[in-house]
Image 1 (cartoon, rainbow, N blue to C red):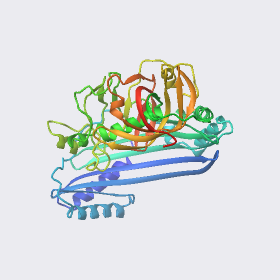
Image 2: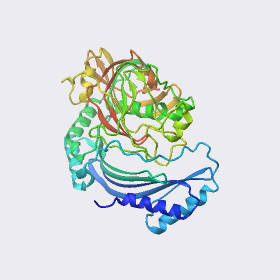
Image 3: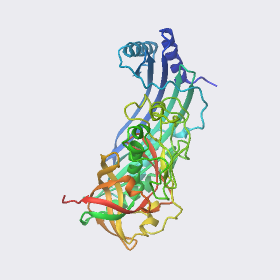
Image 4: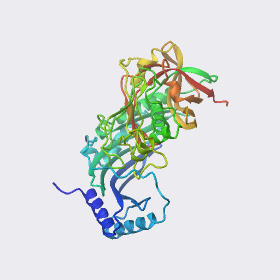
Length: 463
């Protein structure tokens, strides 16, 4: 077996640290990320780019002080410079009394998703999916991207932990546009072969055409069906502000382990080994990852920790393997593979194109409410209760008697996300989850559609 080049680089950096004397705690993460992106606008590809970068991260703890540094210059001179300047900086850093120590040696619990053909994908393969998307839009103006990514990572520290892993990712995100309405479709997978450009383009175009001449509705509390693209925003913010060990130690999160805070239909799982999902098999501190249930049948079971937040929590808390690369002293640990478990129902045949397939059966249960495609520009108003404000986007429709009745102009909302998922507030969960990227926390989220009893819309198109 050929040696792992990323692990070899990590070993070189540790050797340079040892040669400098002083015996500091040291950890090195080396990540090679090859990202290829095909972008299109006005229904034509206008940019095709590729970036292949290896980044070396070094964190030192010496004399009670901690400092991190990084470089993309991976030759001998670049590595020596990284060690020298990080070693110099640690002498002048503030004291770090909460340093939790390094991760001990431990084997990995599983292998993250990886697809070799996706890692080696050519521009023509991405361009083919763009062509299918554009053709399926039937003459509507389109824009978006198709991307592939391959990441190979190694971690090593002076305590003896050394692990490697790799993952692949393919994603497509596109809109179709009429003169007055937009439609969107997205998909992410570990494999490029899972991306159906024609299917995505057809759904985006159908949504755009169905959104022409929207009506304006007054603000108020409406029953809603949130499509997976909207549910992904709930999951990302729950991960960032809620199930975060640092936030719970600082008493600025709603999460209360052991309490039934959610509807019994809600089960939230962070799983880096989920089928067809990209992920990493170890965290930024070299701790092996494992499947972790955060909410089980409505009961909050736990929050995620890195080594630092676990030490801060006390009471025997240990890391759950959720450290972010470089250490999360500012934000804490995140669940980067969070998923809402799907419901038991089956998709209904009605509205098979305009409505996400996983949401069609939920729409049929609504007497009067709204179908929401996207939540965007969302901002937290109160971290403790996770009250969020934001806007709808890319399509809202009035539902009457289980049918799509009319497109609706975009609305502003102010809503507590946990309250929207509270006991008796969830009326249904779609039977399948869609894997989506989150730009908020660089996470992969598994989101089914949601049927909620109420969502608080505070403003319409007129204010």
